[in-house]
Image 1 (tube, protein in one colour):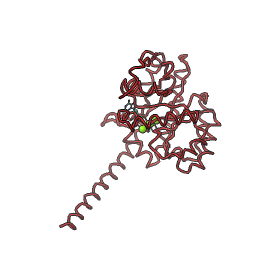
Image 2 (cartoon, helix red, strand yellow):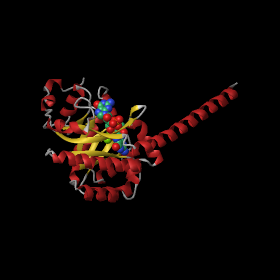
Image 3 (cartoon, helix red, strand yellow):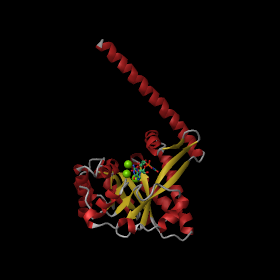
Image 4 (tube, protein in one colour):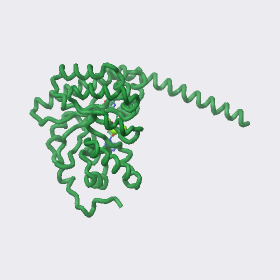
Length: 291
Ligand code: C2E
Ligand code: MG
Ligand code: MG
Ligand code: MG
């Protein structure tokens, strides 16, 4: 019986894998159409300076407006695009679109702010990444310091020795480099010190875990590490007042999350940039503890 059961189980698993492969193929095709048919859109989520309450940067986040399924989350299609290699074309679209939006905002006379762009591991591993970015900067005329690349910890730590050179090439272009989802990978601290990076982005899972002592300990450790290495530190996924107060008290430089704003349309960026969050950042010292 055990054997029969095992086989049934195996077959079930097989079918499930098969269904998933079919699903992926379908998505691959649909995504190809999506890029042709202008079904992709960018949203921007503000990042707030904890000392001034000013919005100093925005993270570009891609959305797929599917004709039948409605908004499809990047958590669904980015991994597919990464496996199929479509992320390269998608990434080119994102960069061009960001360039277009920046021109639109600049023409309105807005204060300059940084735009953060997610770079997937496959994109990061392209040998021509620095050249590609450099060409974009030339073509768009965008000041390099306006651009921040968010790289994942695992992408840069994998083959860290080689990546020091690549990061240095990117830095030479004058842009900013951030490590996204920091704390979820396996950073070698000695490499981290040698990487020419500017920002550590605390993964939102730790912010969500702030109520647990170990969650808070990890956040404290990352902030301390940032101070030691002289890096800017940002926390993402701030949803409530307690998380905000904790992170402000601990000296986190920037905050991003639904508490301030969901990702917004490019047309709404000008108003958001003028918004002053300083009243939200005022905290009474006595409240500044989670326990
Ligand atoms: P990420 O780079 O870590 O982006 C942060 C994600 O957290 C975004 O999800 C954002 O909408 C969400 N978020 C922001 N504030 C909160 C909050 O307070 N609570 C919660 N629960 N979530 C919050 P989104 O937009 O669904 O993107 C998911 C992931 O997809 C991103 O994670 C990034 O890895 C990837 N992604 C998005 N756009 C792009 C892109 O243009 N290129 C690449 N390569 N990846 C992208
Ligand atoms: Mg990101
Ligand atoms: Mg992240
Ligand atoms: Mg994430």
